Structures are given as C-alpha cells and as structure tokens.
Image (tube, rainbow, N blue to C red; front, side, top):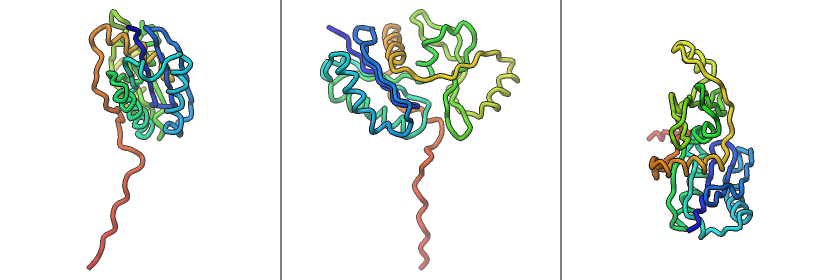
Length: 209
C-alpha cells in the first residue's frame, strides 16, 4: 500500500507538504503569519493536486505543535485533526523546533530560534541524533528574551551555535516518518503555546444595585 503523509505546520507562516512513500511530492510555504485560516485549506488541496493524490489516499497526518502564537497553532492543528478524522487517518504531533533541527547535523550544540514576538524568541537546544536521525533535545522548548537566554547559557558554561530557523513541512513530515520507524511517534496532539494568548475576554463590568 502506498504511504501518503500530509504534513502541516502553522507555528509561523503556513507550511504544507505531501510525502509519498517517504519522498517529498509537493510543498508550499507562505510566510504570512496573519492568514493561516485563509491559506490552510487551499494549500492542502494544492499540495495534494501537485502530488497527484486525493484526500482519501492520505494514510497519515503530521502536524507541528509549536511552540508558536496561539491563533496560528490553533488553526493548523484544528485543520490537521479535521482532515485526519475525515479520511480516517492517524495523526501525529511533532515539535516544530525539532523539525528545524532535523535538517541540521547537530554535531555541535545548536540553539534553534524562532520569533516569539514581544521581543522574545522560542528556543530549543539540540545536540546529536538517534539512529533514525531524530534530534536529541538538551534544553527546551522555551520562550525568553534572547539576551536573557544567552546570559543563562553563558552562566551554565554551555557553548552553542545559533540557528534562526523556518519550519519546513517536508522536514516535519520526514521527522514524523523517522519517529514512526523508531517507534517514538506520538498521537498526542496538543499545541505547545508556552504562554497565554494575546487576546483575552474583557472583564465584565460591575453592576451596582
């Protein structure tokens, strides 16, 4: 049976890829971080079309869990869950920073950073890989001001290389396949927000009487 994996990540922009039997058949990335809801459905359809596949042929779904902004992650994870349920395919959650690290050698400690806004960064420190190429986590994921993070690492005597990354849906999909091969893939799909959403309900007004 042909393995067709749909990979989705919305931790920053909107990234979608289709992998067929472990090979990347199509990939789209849009760096607009404000239009996930508008982009995700069309990107999934376009990726499937480019890969010459239809929805019912998808055998598994992988989705990035972040860390990332509340709204973006929520859109991507909701889309992945609905798609997987619609085609009765298993779904697997993948760390978005891990997907960035997956493309690196990691011979040296590597600090993977993405923009967390508010003058902060999301971070993960990685070094080494498992036999199937899965990045080994030393620290994180977390969120801090870069200066504070660097001060903490300096105080701990931790050397590192910095990688400012962008999540590739194809790398996320390949990491999911590596985890499946190693038996460490997780069907737990919960967004890693790391902090509360920017938008919160307004407090109700007190009524005197």
